Image (cartoon, rainbow, N blue to C red; front, side, top):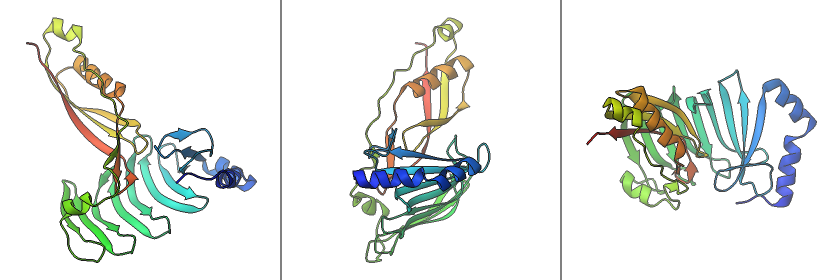
Amino acid sequence: MLYSAALGVLLLSWILAPQGVSAQAENRKSFVFYSTQHQPLPSSKGASYAIETEFLDSINATERIYWAPQKLRETATFSNLRLRRRDGETVVYYNDGTIKRREQYRNGRRQGEGFAYHPNGKLRRHDVYDDQGRKSEECFDAAGSPINCDTLARRDVCPSEIATGRSAPVYFPSKALKLGIQGVVKVGFTVSRTGQLVDVQIVESPSPILSAAAVDAIRRAKWNIRLDNCDPVDVRYLIPFTFAIK
């Protein structure tokens, strides 16, 4: 729901209050407003929510997302905010302040137990993760009865993603053609909850020339924002690019 003009003024005045400015300078806090399409805005006008970032040092940070003044939507800690690497607990809240989802992370990967809840407070989903990924999952309907997790996901009223993406062509470098260089390049990267591309890494490649071409294609593309039970989330991808001389 969009902020009304009055609510936008209230949030702006709350952010710019003298004590807030003082705390911002001391604790290195920042506020950014976002639209319903999760794009940054220059002011509170038309904003759907706001993100407060508090840096603990140059890379460690705590991120808090607000529906409205002092109404918390999500809180998360990052060992590297620029790369969107979560560490510790992430908690997501419903609009009434009850917990929607609680997850544990280590160096950007899910770890341990994760819990999601229905609006009535009953357990919706229970996951267990280790270093290899998800070990187990259990899902329940709003009455508390066990249910297939795929069936539960199909009941979500929100789509799985916001379709703002746009593909980009991959060009075979002329230098690689001349040198006869070919092969598969695997690139890992994260698309943030606001659609930003971060933490691009070459996982496998036969040549730096082909690596540069693959990364260039990824950076020129525009990526969809993924949703988890209506909430935008950071998503990690691993994509192979095949360069073959025929």
